[in-house]
Image: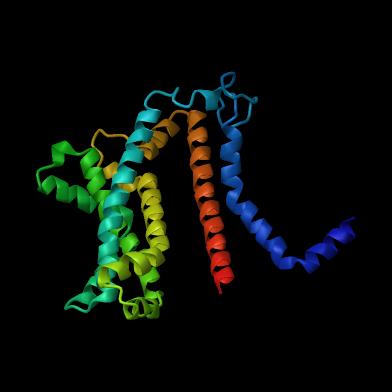
Length: 274
């Protein structure tokens, strides 16, 4: 048996290494999913599995303030994604399709927020808000402004890479077929760039939902989901946090699988057309 296993691993070394890497990467997610079914009511040690229960899934909002914090995070994530994706996409089109004075400097400056440590950006934004007279009004809107600021850079880089790889001959072909600029954009350019825009939007929402350092410095009395988890960790993390974590992982996995399925169907459709 051991000889056969060793022989199989020798023949499929790369596959074996890939499986081991995937297991290593997803161990935390597996533990979170397992702990979401943990009945911790009979023990004060919340980090060991005591007994199986459905109660955490049936009452996900039982911990006081958790779902309110989750709602704040989702609201800020959606709004910052909408605004930053719109501004970032327009900026990416301007940088790729147009030549103007200061273009190289703008390209460089867009990378700076991505390379700047979060603690530096967070404290800088806090100083800005205080200097602008918003020191006593830190909360939802200051968090939203901060998230839009750092999300724009990621959106521009993602959409710009998609635009740079776009075959310009397709747009020229549309023009040769008497399509005007507006028709060429909506029927040719936008559908081809849309996967990049969608990827940028998903990345922006994920970064916004996940952020803790910048949010904590500019939140005032507003509590987001990462801040709630951090505060709860000082005492004992409620098991319902694992339920939310598992749900977020399932949603992310579904989006990735759905995108892959759609991409393969589109590729098969193109192959059949040719």
